[in-house]
Image (tube, rainbow, N blue to C red; front, side, top):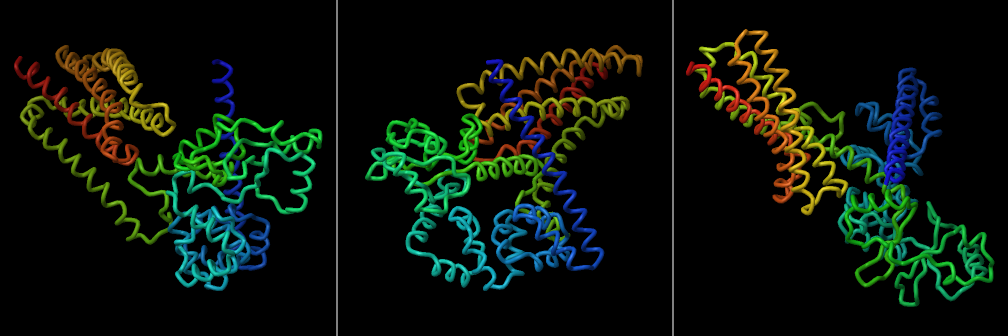
Length: 470
């Protein structure tokens, strides 16, 4: 168990380091590109773009204001256009497509893999879609239709139907000759898939075995197990977990009847992980990861109105509760100084639990079977933290105002609100998920309302009873 935990930690550290290196690389490219644009020398910009791949250019375009973005996009080679369009977010892609001639779009789409084409086909103008489909052969059109028939966030939506298959009864020598005749192989090609005559998936044959084992060996002798295939309806998040747990480079995708439908590669999974990270960070603030950060001011402002309005309503709810205790605040002004401490502590405690729950749900670590155990644990954490910090805050309140009663009220209020925050942080994601509401989107707003209202009732309500009664 310790070794497994250490390996997982080592993998996560490696991923974090690679992400930091990637971000630093993009920052360097952005600095160089900005200098080239400021110089006004087009050849410098073109030279820099020619040294980058589609993903790097996509990152740069998302980082540029719209006027500079259009200027840079016009200098990108046509054969890179499609690769760039696949990498950028939906809103930026729409703008780039609008700035590209139909002929260039048609030419660029011809070099895309089926799975990548499926991701952006519906974003293209109708005339371009018709020409792209007309240029494809019947088999590729059928494969494209198959991929697009599945939800985008499922294994079927991620898979590429371009696979290399072999029969179990042939020898490795035959396989080698077949690969030479085939010539071009798919990207991230590390294994062949073994199928029977009906196309049913039987297992995997590692490319390393094909190259190193006795050519007289049959495929069936070296075939790995067939129980590790990914169902076509598996969610993209679960696919990412499968790749992480089994250290996969590629994996077969099968239908309910066991037929091999395609394969998923590690580059697709990295995209899923990055998108989920962006989703978690941005939706917690009421934002959409597909929005253009350089969109017009009015457009960006309108998008934020919904959650700003929701937050205003919840804040007014807390204000109404506070207004009900105005007589108490008029008599004990020190309560107005101290009650933000109570609400803040409850909010932080609740946010910690809420974040753990949302992450656990995203990684599959939280389910109906263990949610009660997590709830009990977080409740005990809230109680313990409440006791520890109530002593500290009660002491501060007593030393500040010289009132034992006020210190006692602060102590009880802190315990109540930390427990309420932990309880709300554990329950809110579960309830929202059952209501088909994204916990990352709405959880923070609901939690803030709960901790604010409970904090006001616990602190000022208790003060009204204990201090005013005295």
